Length: 223
Picture 1 (tube, rainbow, N blue to C red):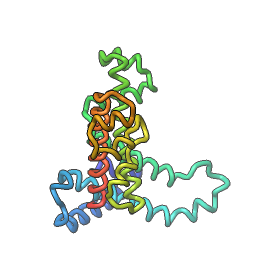
Picture 2 (cartoon, rainbow, N blue to C red; picture 1 turned 90 degrees about the vertical axis):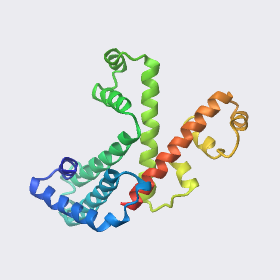
Picture 3 (cartoon, helix red, strand yellow; picture 1 turned 180 degrees about the vertical axis):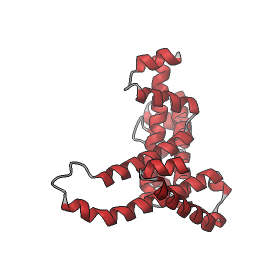
């Protein structure tokens, strides 16, 4: 976790060692609460790391915000806000990468690094444009669900069916499908006016995204 901690706090190595020690102590105290049903040991430690870092950033912000308020008219952007945003970025990106395939993540990362140059990525990866769009959409839907689940935990919302459904993106009728999972594919297809094959595909996708939302929320709450 050292590289993640150093990148997140953006400070000298001595600070990183202090935070890492807090993480070790927290893992040691919380180890008895680890449940394999909630995720891997690495996911448990990573969840503890995120929570310790979040608390550390909040503590530092409380100490320093008064100083920044004094120079508010001179500062164009709040460095503390940038640090927190960078932490949040790595928080959801790290989780998203766990729920998509290495290939999907590499392709989307390359797309981001080339400023969205889809033609270049397709040529270098030997992908059809349609395949690239499918990968991009798959990662987008996962990322949206992860971020919504993290926001739900931050808001102290319970792990209920309604909350998990709200974590799904309102895209392609996924939330509507998720609310009708107790019905048959044919009934869902009729209700949405789509082909039964499309209904089955959306059902499978909705179930996977609900699983991701539930897993993220359980890991965060257990950490």
